[in-house]
Amino acid sequence: MRSRRRIRLAAVAVASAAALTFSACATAGTDAVVQGGTFNFVSPGGQTEILYDPPESRGTIGMLVGPSLADPDQTIELEDFAGQVVVLNVWGQWCAPCRTEMPELQEVYDETKELGVQFLGINVRDPQIDKAQDFVTDFGLTFPSIYDPSMRTLIAMRGIPTSVVPMTFVLDREHRVAAVFLRDLLVEDLQPVVERVAQEE
Image 1: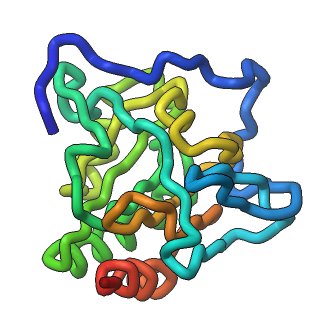
Image 2 (image 1 turned 45 degrees about the vertical axis):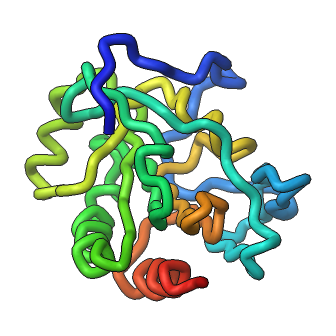
Image 3 (image 1 turned 30 degrees about the vertical axis):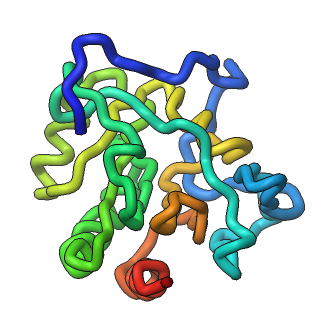
C-alpha cells in the first residue's frame, strides 16, 4: 500500500450507465474464457463457481488500483501484493449476503495469511464512506479494501457481471484468475481453494 496525494484510478469509464440490480448472483450467458493470456469473463449460464486449471490456462487481470477505504489519501493496488495469492471480494454494506459472508472471509484470511495469502476487498455502491468504514469496524475486518462506489476498479476484471454482489476472485501468485465465485461463501467453500492455489509450485 503506497500513500499518494494524487489517486491513480483507471482512466476508462464504466461500460454502462444503466441501473444496477442490487442482488446476489444474477447471471446469464455461456462460459468464462481466457483469451491470449488476458482474463475475459463471459457470464457463465447460471454457474456460480468456476475454477481455472491447469495454471497455465489462466488469464491475468488488468490494472487494479483505487483509494483505500480506511484512508482515501492512500492508494491500494494489486501490484502491492506481488508474489502473493490474492483473494478479491466485491462487497457493499447495503448487501445482506455480504453481511453473512464477511465473518467467513475473515476466518479464511486468518487461517491462510501465513501461507502468503492476502485478502483485498472492493467496496462498491456505498456513496457514504463512513457507513462502509463502520461496516469494517463492526465486523472486525483486518484486511484492506478499496473504496469504489462507482465500481470503476472492476474494469480490471474484464466482462464481469457488475450486477452481482458479492463476488470473490482467487488470484494465484502471478495474479492470474484461478477461481471465480458469484455468490456468498462459507469457509468450507473458499478455504480449500485458497489453500490449493497457495500450495501451487
